[in-house]
Length: 445
Image (tube, rainbow, N blue to C red; front, side, top):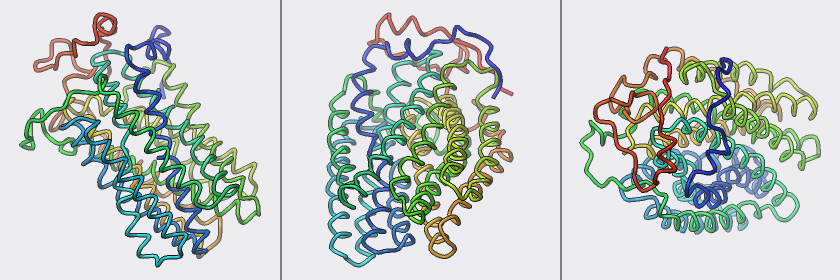
């Protein structure tokens, strides 16, 4: 990415002093933690009960596909009816479904019953990350802190991927193979209900009917959102391919406990890069930064399949992690300028769902490759996924320019203060927030 041009950009300290922020950040962190635990918990449990990485990957993939298909619909419902009204029944369903999946796996039930239980388990995964991002967007409408908030959320996501896999692996290998999935369900219930109780900071519901165009158009009607959704499949391929491949690699070494450590190193690189991206003001527009991030990510992934030692694999995983955060941050930042406020949660959910779908496909492919060709074969999945994502971005980069296509948002910092139809900021946040409302120009290449 380009060099910094200013040291006066609002930082994390100013962001965290935003009125009301901590009321949704703390429960939101608890509620999104299970997202990083779910896939690895299912893989470890089902592999233990069936002895097959292919079966374990397939069950985890069904969960991921269900989440990918249902997450945007949940985001749309949250935009329309309010986050709490969607979140409460969702977390209750998820807890019950995860419990059923656990019981069936331990009972040695037929594989098709695990698939059946995996569908509602994935479909009901609470989309807390997109909901938190939508709250930041509502609180900071028009503020230069929006980019800092996007970086902060990426750091938070990656912190969960540092803690989640390590915690799930420790529980599954040190306590009981089902302990990871049980803990995932418990954290979902506790964190989700606490987050749902924070109604004051939630974006207002937009209950009007959509006609498929104009300010109430669905997020996927925006060409740029479709391009980003395809690109985020590549990020999911890294997460899914790494989870299965690291599990197989460490078990083949006879050191299954290393799995969580190696994945934590990978996620720590992502988190460190996210901190840096949020602390530096970049000259390059978000679209160019996104292309640069993927141009670095694809080559970094291409060497994952070569290492034969945990030390080398840890170093390469750290490098790959450093390349992911810029891609995530610039992608989520672009959404702010591509879609109207009435579709933000839905748009964020499409990106999160794409990561889940890419992860599901990667888990399936890596599981079968591992069964057929050995523990290193699954590492070929991340380079394939990221290369396809990079080709898509290069070919369709023109659709990522704010203002081109249906539903372009007029509320982002990229729009001038005199833009017609600009949505007014929510007045209830008072003068403290209003002081952050000055605009900064954003270049469009």
